[in-house]
Length: 331
Image (cartoon, rainbow, N blue to C red; front, top):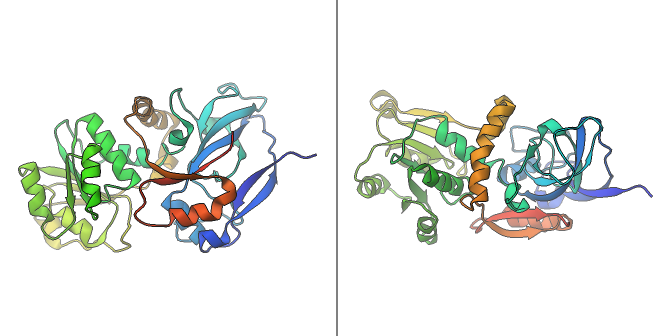
């Protein structure tokens, strides 16, 4: 009898809970340079849902399996593979489709995970922690004691930015839109946590003793982003990596002429495309070290088996969650 595994697929764009199907596929055979990975965990990210809906910039040929992140264990080696061993925990590459029980992957595209990191956390190290690390390093040269500001501070990427900034000695101003998040993020290491509103510039100045803020991280857009931009020091930079409000940023001329603010963007997919293997390894190394020490963790609200994919994506689409929704595959 032919060995098989289960995978989520969609054949047309639409509501994820309506267009996703679970199908049986033939167990893969590795090419000489490939390994077979048995999946352990895969999160549901907003970009995954947007891809299924047809709203993401990258559109794979259909039918396809969704999932941009995931981790698993090597269970079989191709004849030419020398740099991995059976039993190694690995992070899957971009563009694979991780919502499946198993896959064949070129060995050189996998990232080996050191011991001491649980699979469910390893599965979520590739997108939000990498985004947070890169936006904290690639645009403004910060020193310990320097301030930065961010909106969507309760998002997965925002929480990663808090954790990483704290480890690096940076101070964070965190803007949220729900009162119950203020004390929660303070407890998690946010130096200042404020509710968004028309007076936020004055509140930031009071909380930081008017310290210069040269970096803003924007994942919302619209008026929320502009209120945050007003807190930046001259020559400051706003990095946009998300657009939760779906509203454009309308920049007043004075911010460009008189403050010479810089507005730029970051997309982790593009970073991966341009990064060398050495650059990827150098970025993962400190994140692995933080994860091993328990200093970098992504909150999980609930895990689902792949068989409950429709319920899982419906849950992930809800607002005001307390953490990620993750597929957890059986051992």
